[in-house]
Length: 573
Ligand code: ATP
Ligand code: MG
Image (cartoon, helix red, strand yellow):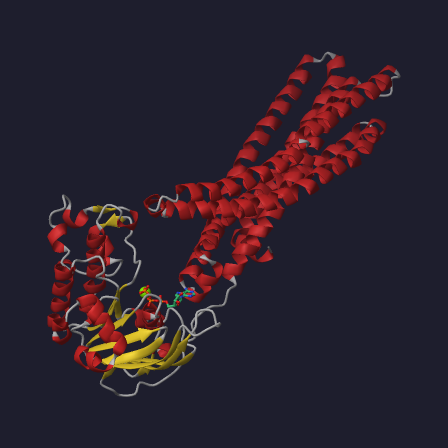
C-alpha cells in the first residue's frame, strides 16, 4: 500500500493546502451549534436585537465559508486523486506492454484487464474518500466531544459513555461483513470471466448449439454471486437501522437528562440543542470512519494486485555479442524451448535461411510452428541453443530494433477499431505510396477501392465489418507496408482462396524484397519455397526443397498425397 501511496508524493503541497482548507471548513461547521447555543442562552434573553442580528450574520458567514471550503477541498481532492491514478495507470500500462508473453501467460489477460480497471478505480475512490472524509470525520468527532465537554461536562459524560457501545456495534457488523465482500469480489471475477468469454465466443456457441451448457455454467456463477451479495447485504443492512436506533436513543437521553438538568437550573436550553447536533455529528463521523476503513481494506487488496504488476521484473536481458560475418540471414542453432518447463515444446531445432529466400514451415496442428515464429520475434527466450539474425544473437539486439526488422501476420492477429489506412499503417510512418503498394500486393486494393470511403473506411473492433479473407488481406498489407527485412506469415493465407494465395506468393517472390517465412498446414502454400521445414511434435522430421522432401521425408510425402491427391502434384515444383 505504501508503494501506491507514493503516487501521491508529487501532490504533497496540494494535499497540505487541501488539508488546511478542509480542516478550516470543518471547524466552521463545528462552531455553528456552539454559537447557536450561546445565542439562545445568552443573547436572546437580553432582547438586544442588533446583537441577535450580528450573531445571525456570523452564523450565516460560518455556514457559507464551510460550504465553500468543502466544495473547494472536495474538488481538489478529486483532481489530486485522478491525477495520481492516471500516473499509476500509465505506469501499469507501459509495464504490461513490455511484459514477455511468458509473464502475460502467468497473469492471464482477464486478470490484467481487471487490475488495470476495477482495481485502479478502487484506489481512486480510496484516495478521494480519505481526502474528503478522512480529515473531516476525526475533526468532527473529537471536536464535537471537546465542545460538548466545554459546554456541559456532566451531560457530555452521559453521551460519552454511549460511544464505546456505538464503536462496538460498528466494529462487529463490519467485521462480519468484510469477508463476505471479499468473497463477493472473487465470485464477481469469475462472473466477469464467463461473460467475457461467452460474449467473445457467442457465434461459436450458437453455431455449436452450446447455448444451454453455457447458460447452465452462467447460472451457477450468477447464483453464487447473488448468494454472496445477499449474505453481505443481510449483515450490512443491519448497520444503518442500528445506527438510527442508537441515534434516537442518544437523542432521547439528551432530552431526558437535559430536561432534568434544565429544570434543576444546572443546564440551559441552548446547550441541549447544541448537544442534539453534536451527537448527530458524532454518529455521522463514526459511520464515515467505518466507511474509510472498509474502503481502505478493499483498496489495499487492489493495491497489492497492482503492485504485483508494477514491481514485476521482467525485462528481456540484452547481452553483448559481436556479429559474425555471414551470408545467412536467419539461423536457428539447436534450439530447445518449453512454455511450462514440463516438456519441451520445441526440441533441437536447427536451420539456416539465406537472405531473400522463402522458407516454408509445415506441420500438423500443435506441432510447434507458431512457437518458432514467437521465438524468432523474441516473445519468449529460448531455453537452449541460439537464434541468430545477420550473424548476431537476437538477444543482443535492442528489442525495438529487433522487432522493427519484421513484418508479421500472426495467427489470430487482430484489426483495431479505426480506419482501414490506420490499420495498415499501424502507427508507423508509412507514406501513401507504400500504403497503396502494400495493399496492391496483398490484393486488398481490389476491395478497398470499392469501399465508400476507400482507405478512410471505418473498421469495427476485430474487423467485424469485413469478411475473413478481407481481414487477412488487410493484415498482410500491414505486414508489407513498412518494407520489412523479414516477413512472417503464420497461417496467413488460410482464409484466402487458392488462387489469391498463389498470386500473393508469386508477387512476394518476384518482389524479392524480404526473406519470407511461410507457416502453413497446406502443402500448396509452402511447396514452391526454397526450403521447407517439416515439424512434428516440436522436432524436425524433414528439411529441404519440395522435390527432396518427396524423396526422403515420409511425413511430407503423406501430406502431399493427402492434400494434393494424385502423383502428378508430387513433381509440381
Ligand atoms: P497450429 O497449426 O494449430 O497453429 P502450431 O504448430 O502453430 O499449431 P504452436 O502454437 O507452436 O502450434 O504450439 C505448440 C505446442 O505448444 C502446443 O502443444 C501448444 O499446446 C503449446 N503452447 C502454445 N502456446 C502456449 C502457451 N502460451 N502456453 C503453454 N503452451 C503453449
Ligand atoms: Mg500456429
